[in-house]
Structures are given as C-alpha cells and as structure tokens.
Image: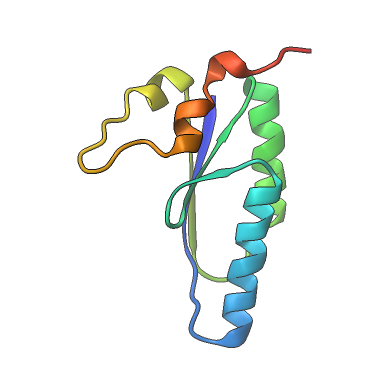
Length: 102
C-alpha cells in the first residue's frame, strides 16, 4: 500500500517557513519520498503499517494550511501515468517487490 500526502502550507512569515520545514523534515525522516513539490509518498507493508504511519502523520500536523492524505494499493500507484516528465531515479529503484517481510 502507499500513503500519498498532499500539502499546501503558508510560507510568508519566518515562523510559517519554520513550520513548513519541520513538517517536510518529519515526512522525510518517516520514510516518505518526494513525488513532486508538496506531494510525498510512502510505501507501507499492509494495513497495520499504514494505520501506524497515518497516526504518526496525524500527530505531526501543523496548525495551519491544507494537508490531504490518500491511501492506495501498490497496483493503483503503478498505474499512474506520466503526462509530462518521467519517473525519478528513486522511483525507478524502489518498488513493492523490494519490501522485506519479517
């Protein structure tokens, strides 16, 4: 499964830029990869792991801005079509088959 986070945070004031940087850093430290500006994706191994990361995300939300989350299957993610551009190097290297099961 994949969690996709879309966000639009204000960055006019210095404090707002700091909140933006903290939220972005949280996403990167929690295993999310940037798909596009303000769009991050995380590969999860099953529903339990997805719920765990959704809860962590909910606990790290800033007070202002717009943040949306979408959970989809890996098959649905693979069906995404590129209208302009191509997959990043990271997207080409990582796929669901490379998940390790414990």
